[in-house]
Structure formats: C-alpha cells, structure tokens
Length: 491
Ligand SMILES: NC(=O)C1=CN([C@@H]2O[C@H](COP(=O)(O)OP(=O)(O)OC[C@H]3O[C@@H](n4cnc5c(N)ncnc54)[C@H](O)[C@@H]3O)[C@@H](O)[C@H]2O)[C@@H](O)CC1
Ligand SMILES: [K+]
Image 1 (cartoon, rainbow, N blue to C red):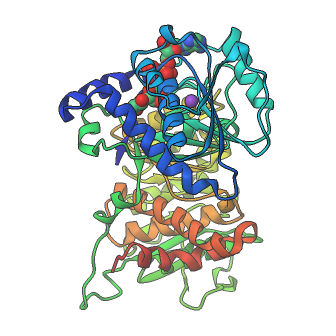
Image 2 (tube, protein in one colour):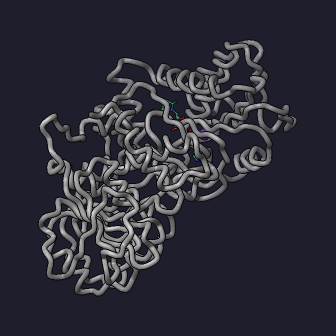
Image 3 (tube, rainbow, N blue to C red):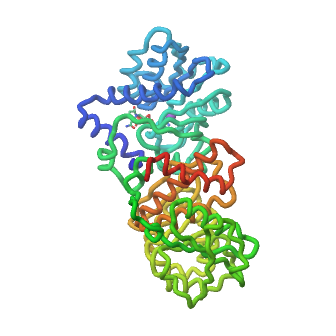
C-alpha cells in the first residue's frame, strides 16, 4: 500500500530519496517531468498538440519548465508562461529554464496577451504541495483567468491553490485531470474537491513502498496488488462448510430486495450456504429471488452460533426493538457487518454501540455517518471522526463513497482506489454488505475482509459499468463479482 505522505513532509522525502539513490534533486525533477509526459501523450488523442504551461515560482513550476522542454523535443507547439522573475524562482526551476530549447514561446504573465488558441491543452504548474496560504494578487488573477478559459486542463501534482492535506482555503485551479506524483495527496480524495481535481492519476517516479513507509503517518492508498496476498485459498477437498455459512437480517415489508441483494452478492463472492431472515411476521412468506438462498426464522431466543458470519441492516426498517437488536450482539458475540438501518438504529440507541462485538464492520454512507456522529464541516473532519469511532469502539468503519475510507481500530486509515461514479445506484451498499459478510464467513480476518470486500466491490462496479455505464444496477455489480476473481487470477 502507498502511504499517503503529508504535504509538509514531501520535501524531506525528496532529500532522503535523492541521497539514498545518489541522484540530484534536478534529476528527480527530470524523472517527474518524464513520467508526466509519458502519461500525457497517450491521453491527447485528437488534440492538436498545442500546450500552454503556466509555471509558478517553486519546484512545481520547475516541473512545468522541464515538461515544456520535453514536449518541445516531441515537436509540439509549446508556450511557457511564468509568473515570478526567474532569478526569484527555485534553483531547479532556474536550471531547467536555462535548458529550454529554441522554439518554446516564453512570456512573463504580466506581459502575456491572454490568448490561448482553441484546442490547446492548459498545464497548471503554478503551485504544488508547497502551497501554505490562500492565493492573492497576481497568483489569484492567474488562476481566475485560467478558470475562465475553455480547453483541457491538467494539473501537475495537485491543482494549484489546493493544500495537500486540508480542505480548500480559497480559489483553486479547476482541473479536468490531476497527474500526481507517487501517491495521491490526501485532499485529492475529498468529495468536496471533485470539481477541482477532476480525475486523478498516480504517476510512479520510482519511490518504493518500503522507502515511503518510513514516513507513513497512518494514511494509506489501497492498490490492486495489495489485496492479492490477503485472499484465502481453498483446495480440491474443500466443502461448502469451508466457504462459510452466513445469515442476513433485514428487509421489512416492501424492501424485499435489500437482503436478497446481500445474499446473492455473498453467494457470488463464494459463500457456501446463505440464509435470509427478513423482518416480517411470517418469514416463509418472503420471496427469495434466487433459488440458492434459504430462509431462517430468527428470534431473540434462537442461537446464532451456527453461522460463521452475519450481516444486519439492509432494508431492516426502524421498527426493530432495541432489546432484540441488542440480543443479536449478545447471541453472536463475533465480528459482524452492520449496515443501513442497523446503523440508523445505532444512531437511535447510541448506548448499544458499546455492545457491538469487537472488530465488527460498520458501513455507513455519508448520511448514515452523519446520523451516527453528527455533522462535519469537511471531509477531513469526517475522516477524523470515522477514525475516532473505530478506535473508541474497536470496530472497522467503512465510510462509503468515492475512495471509500476503511478506518481500522488501530488508527490506520486506508483509502480505496477501485470503483467509479456509476456505482452510486440503489442497492450498491447492500451488495457490499453481502461481499463483506461473505469474506468474514470464509474465515478472513475482519481487517482483510474489509479490504478485500471494498476493493472487489469497486472492481466489480468498474467491470459491470464497461457495458452499462449509467444504466448499471446493483444486480449488474453482483454478476461482475466472479470476474473480479478471474481478473486478479485468484483461484
Ligand atoms: N517527490 C516529489 O513529490 C517531487 C516533487 N516535485 C514537485 O515539487 C513540488 C513541490 O515544490 P515546492 O516545495 O517548491 O512547492 P511549490 O512549487 O508548491 O511552491 C512553493 C513556493 O511557493 C510559495 N508559496 C506558497 N503558497 C503561496 C501563495 N499562496 N502565494 C505565493 N507564494 C506561495 C512558498 O513560499 C514556496 O516558495 C511538488 O508539488 C512537485 O510538483 C518534483 O519536482 C520532484 C519530485
Ligand atoms: K499544480
């Protein structure tokens, strides 16, 4: 997993990395510029190959100058507009400025005519992770001018004006794409910044996970390779008991789909036996939409011990009695998955939080999370609150959304990389509950069940949306679950 390093530590890392690798900071900047250009060129497709690079005074600006040179070497039309006098810019900016080849159109911002030819690509290299205060004066004018321009806009490392680890504090460059070096900066993962970061891409500049781990401060970015080693393997003699017997409690009258989706998702994730216990008087009048699903009549007196894992909450309704709810914790005693109305009931009866079995997985979306812990001023505060909840009650909190956060009881916070906007559809959360419960039932450690569940869920959404886009449904996500195992070559 990439650690997500704080913005104010990044300069220190650059120095340590250059000394460990025996390279100069100028060489590191060259690597960054090259990785950017290697990524950029295939993205251009129908563009005419005309670039306007806007460079600020620090090393982000230096990256921009180096990129202008590399683009010129590839015979593109390149304009470089710099903002501060060159002799006041960073050393590596100046070294790169001296190396600019003939043919790059160079102009200082205050002398620039403000014209950008149609179909040009605007590259924002004004500020990177060194931003430490809101933009004002000329810098503010530059960003305001560029935000009014039409054309594809790409930010280097981070959109200028956005601080690396905090909520935005002023005007920010509005990028269509952000190409960020080595690991995503924390603020690129905040939903409220979606309109300025555009789509983000992580570019490798050669720093290994083990090198970066020396500087970690608890935040990590989950990649595909990270989950491969977490999976359990099963052999030829495994029987359905090895794959887990799971139960879903939920679905009041009128919401039959909810636990059907969870149950079916858990079958597709590999569960051996799946039971549904709907919240209706006559359980056996319930319609299981899939023949492999079985019904179970639960009461506060029945034993839940026969199940390897349980998932509670999808479509449950708010009429569930407090004592019955508590009895589930007391009777099962082991980690379980709590979602939807299970969480809303915890918000209604907060005294029950302390009864939740340790290492259970809670999966609130933003609204359910707000009901549980109150409003947050921004996503950073939300992340802190999720982490506190996980630590205080020794549970795993999965805060769902783009880049779902997995907050672990030991304080680590893992941000997911898989998934896309098409997954914001009815029942998508019920599917996640099914997958998480399935992994728990197959004997995965709760932490591994959370990580694998979240990653596979996002990957299934990516696969299903290839042919369905906006028309993708939760059932399509379920049908794509087996393909996630095939894609990752998991037996
Ligand atoms: N390992 C990495 O991550 C690498 C980073 N590089 C680049 O270096 C960048 C960081 O460079 P720097 O630390 O020079 O930071 P910046 O390029 O963001 O610039 C910081 C400078 O701007 C000033 N400043 C900050 N906020 C301001 C404001 N609101 N108005 C006016 N001036 C302001 C600061 O005092 C400082 O002089 C990264 O974002 C990245 O683009 C690459 O060159 C090489 C590799
Ligand atoms: K930038």
